[in-house]
Image (tube, rainbow, N blue to C red; front, side, top):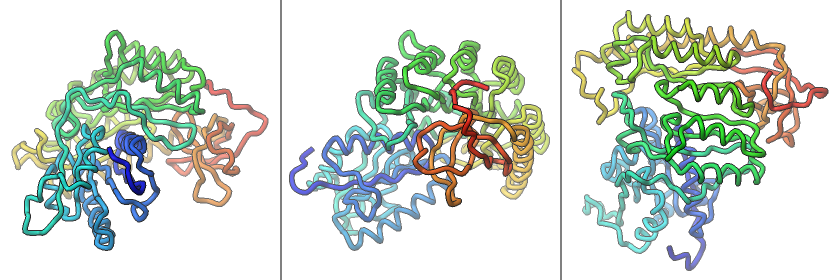
Length: 462
């Protein structure tokens, strides 16, 4: 791309999951390598990219509202380029150019490598004319082709300074759960070369990163030549300088004996496992196409807890899935009480056009009021269990990675190896360091603690 003239300024604003955050860093890295200056607000930028999620309708409405706000900014700066990227861009495609009148560029998750070229085409007026030419709009461009091999190998993310980093190892998904839009907006599963992943993590460690999270849509289904996820996880855990290793989001079907052994044997792998269950009824799970039963899910839970007794388990649950009866919802509550998750991300079913569930008979859809009532009951049960688990942790001295300032004056926020958030009095020069902290009390979901100065954090369990 030509970089003649003034340096162009770009701002990437991200909504959604950890993979979206990582994609935002990737876009910043691609643009920075092509001479763009990355700025910290839309008001400073010549190019604003809104990086989006399409999992739920609420997320899309939020993005459309934000794009309308940016449109007001653009009225005073007509040369500003507004782009929408990511899953929502892929799902809505060129229709987004009509629905959001100020959008110039729409780029799906496999189009980021070509961002600089796309922006240059718009700048040169080479994009196709607007579909509604009567509006007098300047040219617009959509980059929406899914690529069965694009995993962004060889490109560098622009990570923010700190002790932690997201490391994507997989893109797309082959599972095709009936409620999920991801396979249709991110394409099939594509894994990165294991050697490149390890080289990236060694480079991060050399730069002072000690805490890494491996990312994938179903991260533990990873395969590359002779590598599976368990062998990659073990290799990452043994990289010099890496002190904590996490991964998200695994699929229950790929939780193997080998994976759990790695989690038990490698002290840098943290004692937390996110294991989405989605529902506690076999009939609902079958309609979701989750490919496991309640019994097989519970077998994996027992295997995990028998091997790593201190493992913190978290999950995702959807209520009000089409066809869910009251008895089936009660079965979900029963599973939650049996497993006793440390935390749960709970949702009311949100219909996504283009997914198989959207084509179920209209009579199967649960009344929104009933679904909301079920969600509230589920949240009550979940929070009660979480509060009981956390109450038993009060008094423990744990290793905390200090992440950022808390809301209270003189307070910092940190995270334990079991992914518990702790606020405690400390100076902000401790950000990025590991401290020993006593858990003095719990608010139910989080903790309030105090530093223990005569204990040196070791980074090992216990």
